[in-house]
Amino acid sequence: MSNQQTYNVAVVGATGAVGRKMLETLEKRQFPINELKLLSSKRSAGKTLTYNNQTYTVEEATPESFEGIDIALFSAGGGVSKKFAPEAVKRGAVVVDNTSAYRMDGNVPLVVPEVNEADIKDHKGIIANPNCSTIQMVAALQPLKAKYGLKRIIVSTYQAVSGSGAEAIEELKTQTEDFLNGDDMKAELLPVKGEDKHYPIAFNALPQIDVFTDNGYTFEEMKMINETKKIMHDETINVAATCVRLPVFTSHAESVYVELDDTPSVEEIKTLLASSDGVTLQDKPEEQIYPTPLAAAGLPDVFVGRIRKDLNQENGYHMWIVSDNLLKGAAWNSVQIAESLVKNHWL
Ligand SMILES: NC(=O)c1ccc[n+]([C@@H]2O[C@H](COP(=O)([O-])OP(=O)(O)OC[C@H]3O[C@@H](n4cnc5c(N)ncnc54)[C@H](OP(=O)(O)O)[C@@H]3O)[C@@H](O)[C@H]2O)c1
Image (cartoon, rainbow, N blue to C red; front, top):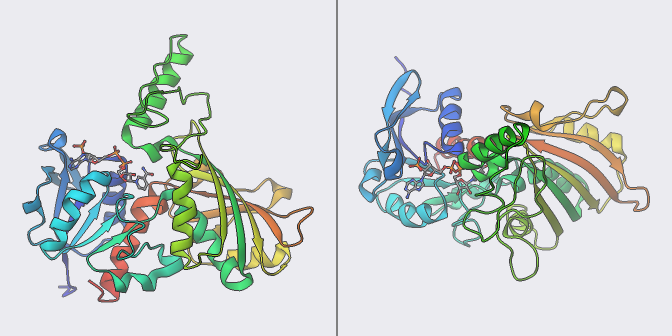
């Protein structure tokens, strides 16, 4: 019999797009769970979900849900994290939060393990999981930063609807069917739930993810800018982002331009990325090999291809970065943090 220590784990938002992937990932990794608690809003309380061939009944999250919990994985929206994460911490749990509620809080580490795993040990009960589009970008760029120095990033994203949750996946399906049947498409959710205007996502591209901020950038774009600096511990990197939603179900793609301090060859960059943790190089233009969202879906890695030198800027490089937004962008990164808490005795 194994005498491995096991932990009481709560998944908050277990019925959501990220929550379901969280369960799949915990199961795949055989995370050492003693008791598992699946939490949602009142709407889904009583539903059942399967974990390790066992049926679990989903419960409505309340402060008391966190009694005896060691690790709580939150992905139920920022408001839910603001309300319940402190309650979980008060009861002795360590929270890994997928929402934007605490990401820029100076007391909360914001972690992509391939970049800044050591920050986890400074936690005071909450560790934030970065925005999905930020995670895949910094995971691919950190090896370049460490070896060649990183001055500037200009990124344009091509983001999947699952980044907006389970309802957005349904909206894309329904609109696609309606369009192909010759019916009117109803747009009720995207680009942003609760905003005045909605546009169809099927057969379209929407240059708005999250609400606009005063400087003309969207909140999603500002997340990429601010979170990158925090995760990489470098306020001097110049970052600009344009975030676009596409009619893709899973995996975000990003066209990324970087300026380095140094001027390595493309071959040197490929060799470095090919041996970097969590990164898979897919870059053989002569064989039409490059990453795509469909091929990346369901896989944990960050895929990089199309690496080219800029034609005018000596230290400028272009690349294409793709990853499953629900895995490395959310569930897998959270479970990696939970595994690190356990492995390093940082709970
Ligand atoms: N999708 C992504 O790629 C991604 C990536 C990183 C981070 N995130 C963040 O993760 C969070 C969840 O995203 P998602 O895509 O999984 O959304 P989703 O599919 O809409 O799921 C939302 C989940 O939150 C639960 N919930 C809603 N209100 C609640 C409440 N008052 N109390 C307890 N649970 C409640 C829902 O339960 P019911 O079933 O009861 O409604 C559901 O389980 C968001 O903050 C999002 O920004 C998402």
